[in-house]
Image (tube, rainbow, N blue to C red):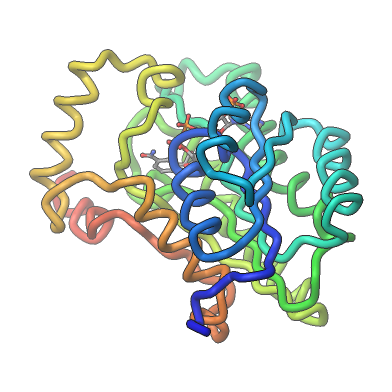
Length: 257
Ligand SMILES: NC(=O)c1ccc[n+]([C@@H]2O[C@H](COP(=O)([O-])OP(=O)(O)OC[C@H]3O[C@@H](n4cnc5c(N)ncnc54)[C@H](OP(=O)(O)O)[C@@H]3O)[C@@H](O)[C@H]2O)c1
């Protein structure tokens, strides 16, 4: 069996109905895992689960509500007993100049991008198997000083700190904790959450393609490949890292400022 096989494993993917979460869910299912996908929109989740096939199940829940994630854990416990892989991916990006960052804007982002990831892991721990893998989602934006992203960068940088603490807290249970920091990968959130027009997305994609050493923006399934790597025995000696999956953009970005 390949070191990347996840046959017999149970995975949870938050934000698994669209975008990078769906890319992760697809690759996890292809590698043999049974995948639970979580998001707030039931119909979006049901469609995604249907396309993923018989090894997937949708559960509507809001990661920013602790009781929702406890309910998700109890459903998984009832149906499968335990969970092996947690890909905490649900989150959103919005920019606003420092002077305009209201308490409400900051709280909303903290609730999903930071507390949501903490509640997800907290809720899953009681049912998580020894030898499990937790993968949190940060962003290249946390590390490059991009104007207007005070709140977003703060939540995404905090995730890296949490992961480091959890590697030691979960050491005795042999649970590894790693972070993925995606680069530019156009998803539905660019339009629905960030409010970009289709033309703005195209212009952004072209601009990024020119800047990114690999020569193009990323694809959701490329995050999925990184998730499978970090979830599987192929990464058995890797713990506490921040894996930047951005085509090399973070490495050259500083030179442009
Ligand atoms: N795409 C990029 O370029 C990029 C770059 C760096 C980092 N990221 C990070 O990657 C992650 C995924 O982004 P994406 O581009 O795939 O975004 P997306 O297309 O907007 O997908 C986000 C998913 O998360 C779910 N979600 C949002 N808030 C939620 C909540 N409170 N509870 C449960 N589910 C929630 C959404 O479903 P519902 O609306 O139905 O809840 C949706 O399925 C985010 O954490 C983002 O910050 C993305």
